[in-house]
Length: 237
Image (cartoon, rainbow, N blue to C red; front, side, top):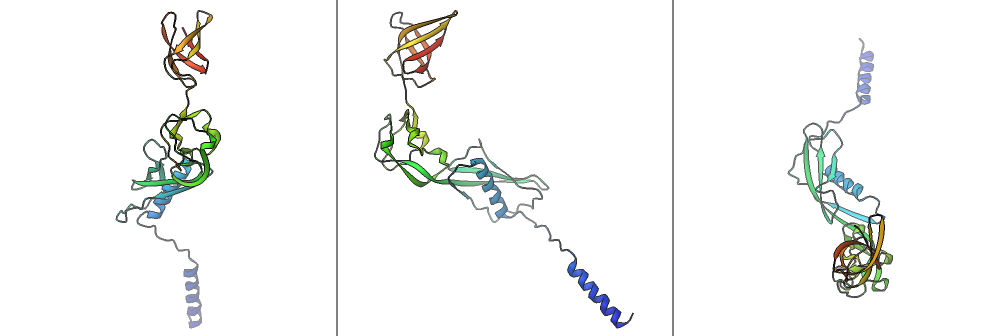
C-alpha cells in the first residue's frame, strides 16, 4: 500500500471515529436535583389547580447519601394520610434495580387573596363582610385553608377568637346553629304510615341536618330528631 493510500485510510478512520455515536456512561448515583424535582412535582399534582401561586420548598438532600442510579422514573408520593399541610412529608422511591426510598420534608405556602379581620372578634360571634377586608398575602399551606370570599361567611360563626389583621382560616369558622336550646320548635314524626306534628322544646343548639334531643313538654318524652330548618325537626318512629 502506497503512502497516498495509507493517508486516505487514516483520514477515513478518523472520520469514522468522529461520526461514531458516543454513549455517555450511566451515572453511578441518582442526583439530588432529580429527587427534589420528583418530590415537588408530586406535591403540585396533589394540590391541583388551586388558582393561586403555590410555593413548594423541598428540604435539601443530605450530600452524604449515595443512592444508586435509578433506571426507571422516580415515584414520588405524599406520605401519611396523603393530605397536604403547611409542612408535609413526601416519599421518593426507585422501583428498578437496587430499589431504594427516601423521605423529604416539604414546606408549602400560597400567595392569594384572603379575608383579613378589620378588628378583633370573640368566639361565637357571627362574622359579616363588614368585619373583613380582602388582602393578597403569602400564608402557610394551601389556598383552600383560608376564606377568600365574603359570601363564604353566610351562616357561619367563629369557633375561636380572631385578632385584628388575622387571615381567616377555614378551621376558625363553623356553620352557625339554626335551632337554639330552649326554643319551641315543631317535631314532624313519621310512623305507621302517618305523620304527626307536635310542638317540642330543643334541649341543645342544632345545625342543619344535625341530630339533637327534643322534649315534648306535655308527656316529658325525650327523642332525638334531625334539624331540617329553624322551625322544624324530624324523626321516624
